[in-house]
Each structure stands twice: as structure tokens, then as C-alpha cells.
Length: 112
Image (tube, rainbow, N blue to C red; front, side):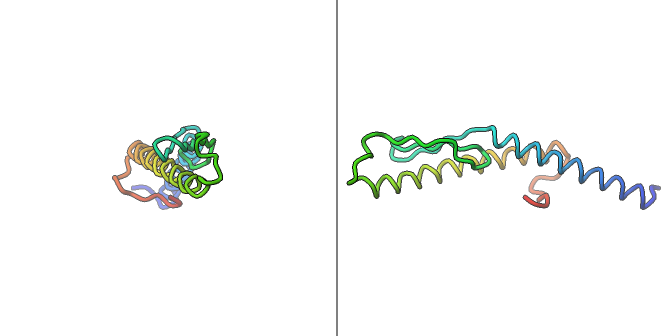
């Protein structure tokens, strides 16, 4: 039977491993790109899967002052589309990491 000290040491090592894997996953998510689009592709936003905006493309046809409100709405919609895709990838990567650690599906790690 393991002593309390051995069990605490094993728990500490497991926590350090999880923390390291979380840090690695956050770095990986920042290298994966997603693209959100709105208005049939008139506005596109590229983001990292971590949610960092990398670029915005706006079709020239929307550059008229009379299109300002629509342009603002399309930028918001494209960002939300990119954010949803980033969240989906983040969730997939988290599930993959948890399965690799042998954790049950749906298990919530602290800080997630």
C-alpha cells in the first residue's frame, strides 16, 4: 500500500503534467487558423483557434459610406463565425488531450 507521501507526490506529478500539456495546447491553438465569413464572403476574418484576430478582408463594394452600417454588421458576423470555429477546434483539441490522459469524456479540468 502506498504511503500518503507517495500519493501526494504522484498527484503533484500528475498536476504538473496536466499543466504542461495545457500550456502546450494553448500554444498549439494559437498556431491553428480559422476563417469566419459573412455576407457571402464579402467580409472575412482570420483568427487563431485561441481567438486572436490575424486579419480582416473587406470587399471593395462595401467601402461606400452608405454601406457603413452593413459593413459593421458583417464584420461582427464574420468575427462571430470565426470565434465559433475557433471554439469548436479548441473543444476538439481539449477532448483529444483528455482522452490521451485517460480522463472520462466531459471531465472538466480546472481553469478550462
